[in-house]
Length: 426
Ligand SMILES: Nc1ncnc2c1ncn2[C@@H]1O[C@H](COP(=O)(O)OP(=O)(O)O)[C@@H](O)[C@H]1O
Ligand SMILES: O=C(O)[C@@H](O)C(=O)COP(=O)(O)O
Image 1 (cartoon, rainbow, N blue to C red):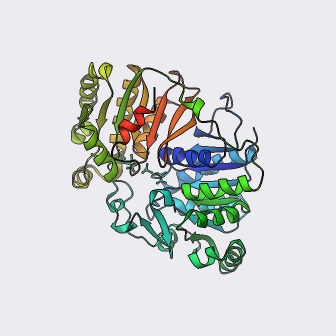
Image 2: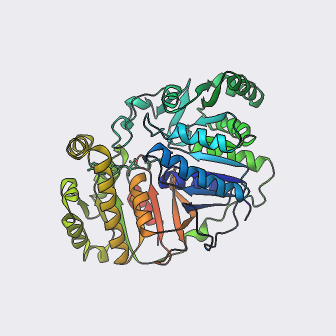
Image 3: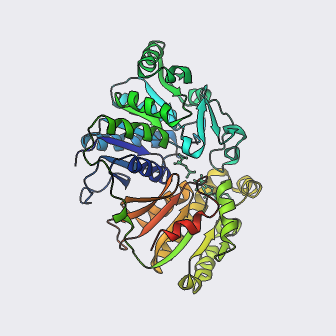
């Protein structure tokens, strides 16, 4: 299997978001969970997205994991590797976007890296280096209250500089509108000035198409699904993609079984989706303090699901509003409480699968990563899109048999996302 485009995603929802975008834009794509075992039979594809859970781990661990994935992708022919980050640039001053970007650039022989989290379809735009989420600057958006990576600065040149060893430049919209020649000239002068990464503005998909064309001539880029769209369209325009369109219908052949939704995202969109779900499905709100105190709350949740789940889908959620999250974090610490809750929701998820769940929605990036890891799912085929950034996924090589999943990024999806997702899974 020789691939044209490789990607390393820093979380699993982000990986499925990117895989969805690449598929929609004409690349046959598979999403692997980590570097797959050599015995795993993967389909013939144009692009592989390797999902890693490295957004909120120490920077040195993120660099090591990303470097191994990069080697694996290059060995399979990838001429370009996209480091898929969050469209809201989720990270802390200690990393990991800067260190991983620099390490991937070094591994490819140095050179300057284009960086943009713009994803216009979901309202993420970058102007003069400042990230907007819908109509709000990043630091005024709900991302200011993220449990693990609260974002307090919309100026991405500043944010990335704090995470980087070398200088970070800016390619503004005027230069991007002037076309690939102007961008390359600016990149050359920024490189001469000592920059190893540049934040690129992008507001419309046409900006990302221009950036994708330029990025494709370099070995590494860093961005969200918008840059994926630009790279995919540039590859298709180059005539190097033979298939033209990607088969997604086969990925949603019915799997039967029971269905469930597990949520650990505390994002504004997810909190509202849970409220809406309460009108049509049984929803269990877990008690976070009891989850941290021991296994009883997990056992109670499984028992609550009991007979209910044979009647219809159930929802189990740890999600809570920012004030509740802060209270828990002040008692147990930010990382410790996040990690303990992820472990708990992942155990609940596996217990539900043992009881026959085969159609599963998980809300939250870290939450999804923990659940998919515990289920030991090796890879996913990409099915149709439920909402921008969220496709139906079909497991590949799964020990429990085929399952359909949706890994929902916290902030994605309309208010009826959960029912919309389950309506596409049979
Ligand atoms: N009630 C809660 N209090 C504190 N942290 C929580 C609570 N519920 C979930 N979490 C943690 O918040 C984090 C949410 O991150 P994630 O799953 O990536 O969601 P998102 O996609 O919205 O970013 C996880 O680490 C999760 O375990
Ligand atoms: O780019 C995006 O916004 C998503 O693909 C993504 O990575 C979101 O992360 P989570 O909200 O943590 O799921």
